[in-house]
Length: 291
Ligand code: NAP
Image (tube, rainbow, N blue to C red; front, side, top):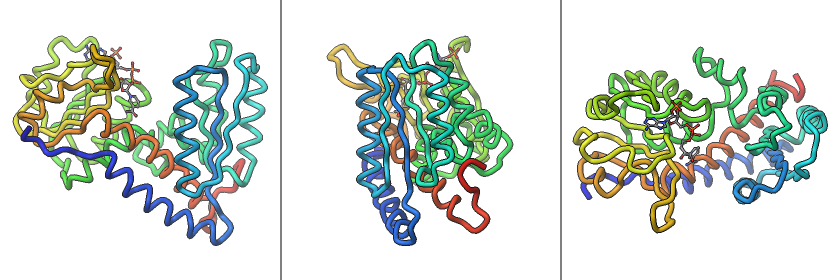
């Protein structure tokens, strides 16, 4: 392996220690950051995700609330619960774990969360803020990818970044964040005829597809920075990304592993967003809950 390893576990640890310190300072003045996590139904993967989020909150010193509801919860009951949390001054971030049962419209749910408490950064308002370069809460996974790139001191200005994937939660916000950092950005997707034509010219590749071996050694320019968002299983059932790590790390300049790269950063950025929301609410002229 010649590529430098971009260690998301180590960066997460360092960032979470800083978050815990800032949390202590806020708590000392009576403004402990608070996150409410709502889980509807009993999807096993979602249960693990929310457990990890709540655990990370308590380790950082946050106030956290986990509300679990039966899959039969009605849409109007869920919306009413979110509205109550919007008004709760002890809660600075609201996260509704996806996917939701089919009878609940996720767009309506996201739209009901107050923009100031939208710590997932999924609302149309948050997306608009990102698109127009206004301050706001950024989607956790792409925001974490930016921190990983920053952590190696890489200057994106004038570089060619290729994002593979165009989902609203990863690919599109990722491209916008890279653009904001002055990269020249290409977005590829399932209708892109020849992915390699684009990736071979890339200084930075962010793979967010959900298909292993989407990026192989022959598709990478020597020295490129590779951020692997994908979460897949290999034939042995082991977690792997979208990038052929063994092959690509022979030519890349820097690369994130899976696991231990982007994954840990997603929860860290959730904590960071919640802390930021609490600090903003506490600032003079800060937005009071429900406004
Ligand atoms: P998604 O909504 O399924 O989007 C996948 C994207 O990949 C789509 O835009 C799709 O294009 C594109 N795509 C599919 N096949 C392709 C191909 N052969 N060539 C080029 N593009 C292709 O998934 P997502 O939510 O963005 O997540 C992507 C991956 O990241 C998944 O593995 C997910 O588990 C992982 N993830 C990890 C974290 C983390 O914390 N580590 C967080 C979020 C997601 P079309 O739009 O044309 O269909």
